[in-house]
Length: 93
Image 1 (cartoon, rainbow, N blue to C red):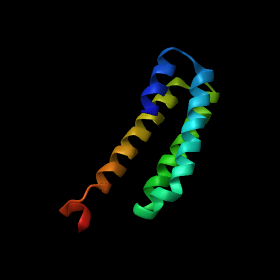
Image 2 (tube, rainbow, N blue to C red):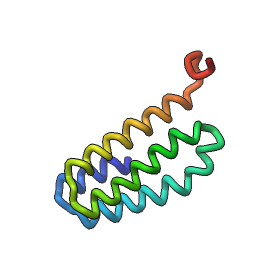
Image 3 (tube, rainbow, N blue to C red):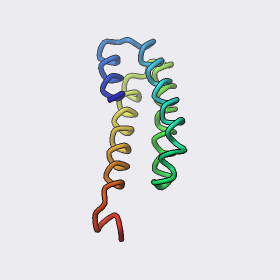
Image 4 (cartoon, rainbow, N blue to C red):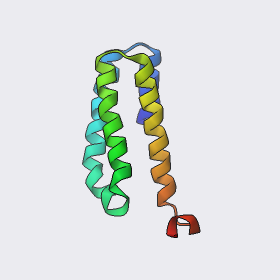
């Protein structure tokens, strides 16, 4: 997953690569945003998109703590979206 790669870049103090990969993730999220919004609540997807945008700025400013917190927020939101996509009684009602 892209977030794992970003954490590895952070661990290796590779800020230029962190920034480039965060931009790539932002582009990917924006490209897939329209397709996912057909099936999901748009608000959930927007939260991921906004957080990825923050991630790019944290990488640019070399804010390690904020960068790592943002990665974990993105991971959590993506997991939440994946859970909402599963068909079960909780998601139906």
